[in-house]
Length: 277
Image 1 (cartoon, rainbow, N blue to C red):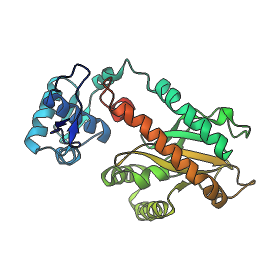
Image 2 (cartoon, helix red, strand yellow):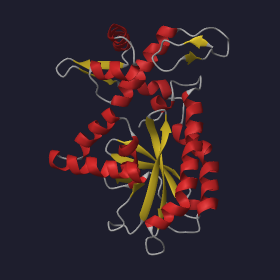
Image 3 (cartoon, rainbow, N blue to C red):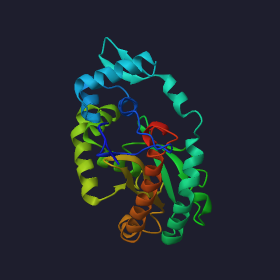
């Protein structure tokens, strides 16, 4: 293994040809990945995220601007990815990959706990169901659930996402999804969620369905969340947590392993660049 100066770890892989990778290209992709993740980012945020010298990051950003992959807003002094970034992953169907990679995990989880589960990803200020085993469950809880959206603050998955995502991302999301008066309460709820070890949905809200969720972590970042949904007239959240939380966390670890393989794949610039979270 070779020393890595890309700002992300101590080792770097060689490609299938065996040649040493072009490190400047790796650094540029790393910067692009963070700009894409952050949405709109100022230079200090990007420097902190990639762990490279400021001058290096500026050169990488200038290069990405010339390639029309990054745009700098001179008025607000923020960088953001351009639509051309989508072309980098145009040959990769993320939804098909996610279904193929996670269906065995979701089916095994369903056999273990009985209640159906979903994989949800952050899109803007909502959590969106990307895959589910509800269609395989004998318990009929809205089986046509793919693509359904839930607000970050009102869903178990959204609360789990907020509780475990990096602090800078969390603060940015809090500013987006709630007003200034509610931010203190939301931060207290996030602290409670972390202490509990999972996100939960308020069963008093319509529809009358409960849910518990845990994050799927890649490093210190939340790739997505996985939940278990249940009927509160049949069981309690505490009972579901007691019986299902262990298997749910194991499933999250297995999904993270699958996603990490995609992050390291030679076919793309990493999981977070290929999935538009």
